[in-house]
Length: 153
Image (cartoon, rainbow, N blue to C red; front, side, top):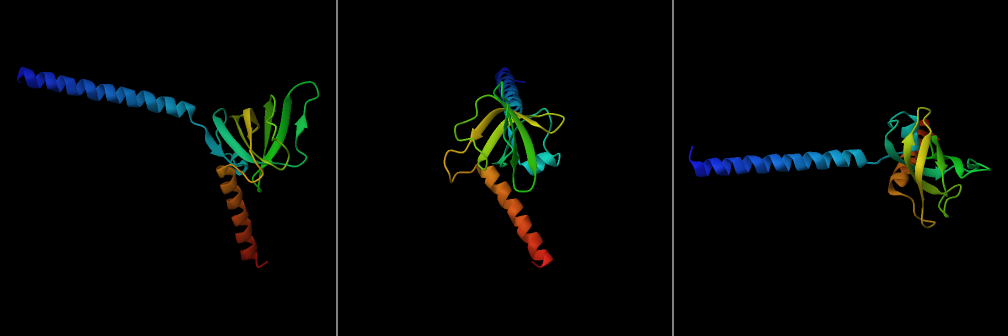
């Protein structure tokens, strides 16, 4: 093989290997930092992985907020209209957090299917709802309408 061609071939192989390593490292970093969204129905149904960082959202169930007297620990339930999931949070909740409002919590599921949140995000105005929560609630409402139609009511 001609020395000039050999140098080009080696250079091309090194560039391809370098790009491959860079893409592999980027994909690895993205996979570790991804936060998938799950609805309360999916969490209660066992679709959400335990010990993986996830996002969960829905409406805070009326009367479900329980605050600790001696710490910042709070436990509350979130629903998508069909199922509920308990969320535990230790810290100061957002000012807009209240019962009957939409929230998104980021955290990890434990073995008891309790979401231990390290961040809670509340909606910023009365008409806003996180897109994932809105779609999940619309899907549940559509299933209810379909069931009512099928039963003849």
